[in-house]
Amino acid sequence: MDTLFQPYRLNGTLTLANRFMMAPLTRCMAGPGLVPTEQMAAYYGRRADIGLIISEATIIRPDGQGYPNTPGIYSPEQIAGWKQVTEAVHAKGGKIFAQLWHVGRLSHPFFHHAEVLAPSAVAHEGTVPRMRELVYQVPRALTVAEIGQLVEDYAQAAANAIEAGFDGVEIHGANGYLIDQFLHHSSNLRTDQYGQTPENMSRFALEVVDAINARIGSERVGLRLSPGAYVHLAGSPADRAVFDHLLAELNKRALAYLHLGIFDDSLTFDYLDGRASDYLRAHYDGHLVGVGNYSAETASEAIKADRFDLVAIGRPLIANPDYLSKLKAAEPLVPYSEAMLAELV
Ligand code: FNR
Ligand code: 8K6
Image 1: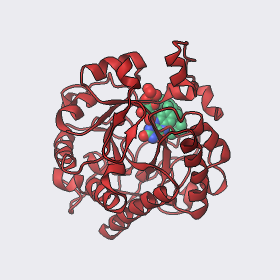
Image 2: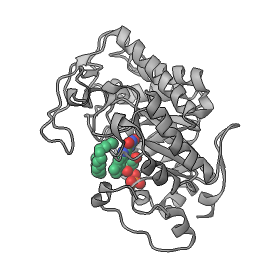
Image 3: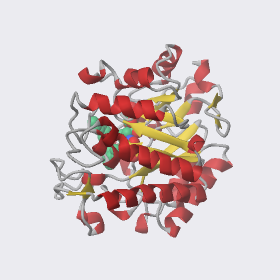
């Protein structure tokens, strides 16, 4: 277990106090105007001993919203709200990245009174969680000009995050949201330069990465991907070639890290020849963050076996703000339960 508690150098700019990351965890607790609150600052501050905190997913513009009270990072008030959060984490010697989010077709006009936009006009079947009266709609396919604007909006959100004091950003390219919708055949039916081939289907993700790298420097940029589709969209064997291409391109870009998006890393995918984490390890050369139902013990074994380099912990950190000190003192952890989502502790 010792390795987990040792400092870890990501690059010339960032060295983490240990190999633990806090997984991004949507809490739906932002205030009016989707502004982060003092309670959120205290919540993140309590977890500042974790090597790197990834913030809850944070929307880059109003039509990126898919759940109630998720914070944004596009207004001056939101930037000021996030400053309280980053100051609380830095005051305790911690580090924090902002997770940049647009939900694409998983949005609803209820949140912003605008159109729902996505790569293609293919709806996700179902309803917004906790708001069962809101049925997901058929989105309108983005025009090429609108895709260009989205790339610019991601880059501006990254610049805003740096202004708010974040140490960097994690691009949310996972879990069936906008960027991931471009990467899978079931949600991307485009016939232009953003569809049909691995090169084209990877284009939007790489444009976002390149625009953000140019704005804030690749050493401050992480990316989360779900090569194995497991939530919000259906996977297909043809997706494999898209991720093969994307990962080969990412190997040229010196990002801070790549982070798997999954809830349980014991899941296997036929078209990835097994676990998504093992597939990423085989195709990606940089720092890899494992996640998905790991304990410190199982993560330590996985790191020893060279399956990944760092581990992100989600639900146990909701249940235990003092996760790290409990581990060090060999004290038992409080088990997570969904009822805990009602409050920020
Ligand atoms: C999540 N997860 C998640 N992922 C993400 O990329 N952005 C997010 O905002 C959220 N929000 C979120 C909220 C809640 C309540 C849960 C439980 C999960 C997924 C999360 O980052 C992680 O991948 C999983 O929780 C698996 O890790 P654990 O919990 O098994 O350590
Ligand atoms: C990924 C962001 C979703 C945010 C929704 C609001 C929070 C609800 C969290 C419920 C957590 C359920 C965990 C199990 C989900 C399994 C998905 C395959």
